Length: 386
Ligand SMILES: *Cc1c(COP(=O)(O)O)cnc(C)c1O
Picture 1 (tube, rainbow, N blue to C red):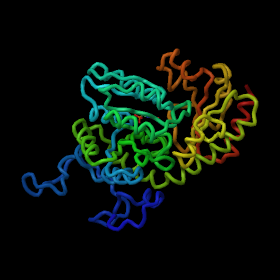
Picture 2: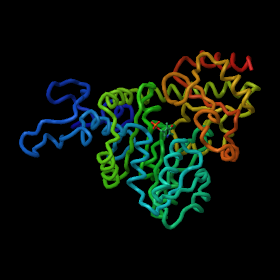
Picture 3: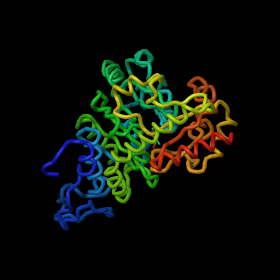
Picture 4: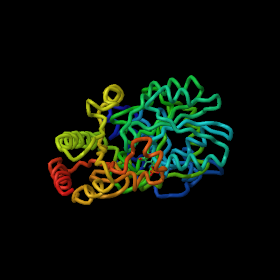
């Protein structure tokens, strides 16, 4: 936009990166469903548009929008969250380099890192909630630190500013997976992170109808390297998915407020019931991460985990739900439930799960934006039926 009316979040969410179409005046960015572009002479392109792996105007609008929301100068969109994470690995690491990764990151992230061991890249998993553990894991050849906060499904928080300082002292880049919080609740670049990555499949998409990822960089230099990986490998989202994401981000603030409100009501309800052994939510004042959450986030999010003690009780709880749907993934408008030990985290070795406190009785709720009364009634009936 030529004159941006505001830098406030909801205004950016609706307007950043987008202008009415120059040819037609269409207010919404068109879906540029094309693989190539006419050239006006040999190698004379219109604005660098030569081929759709390199540039697509719908994708460019989405990238401008997401960069603005995370407060970075540049973003690159990818076909999935893991494609985005892989672009970070290829940008930051060479054979012989070391990386430190949070020990409770998304299972697919760790699977990807294990794959990279074949190419001579070594990684250590540490609990990044403990800055001293991160400090101890740093080696002279550490070039990248990757963390998630809050983590999935244990809801542990890491101090982004403290981790950035440790990473930078060691000459390493800090990348934060902000999928759970979204930029509406947490802006890692403003806390010193160098890269923010999302699975846009989750809250940013918000409607469980697409797969996508994005990397937002704190500097043009890093951003250009990420964009180069995007161009070289071509793991780009199609224009239809970019359009759907542009449509989604317009309501991100409204949806996130509703997710937070519903999650808070459900946490309050669960706290009054005797069946759950423990409720994990960063907004609980007696939780380990509460103080940090108040400092580094502007809300506590829509993800809630409940410890039902045993696998049998967890499965009975889940089987009794009628509104919460049993499925992997999260962040959509509809409420989902999963049992991480047997679903999303089944690939994590049982000893690792036990050491982290990821028990067989843990149930993860992705609280949607239905009426809170209906969600609470559903959980109440499911608890009664155990
Ligand atoms: C889902 C998820 C990913 C992977 O994203 P895909 O879009 O499935 O490739 C990465 N990080 C987190 C935190 C996720 O929840």
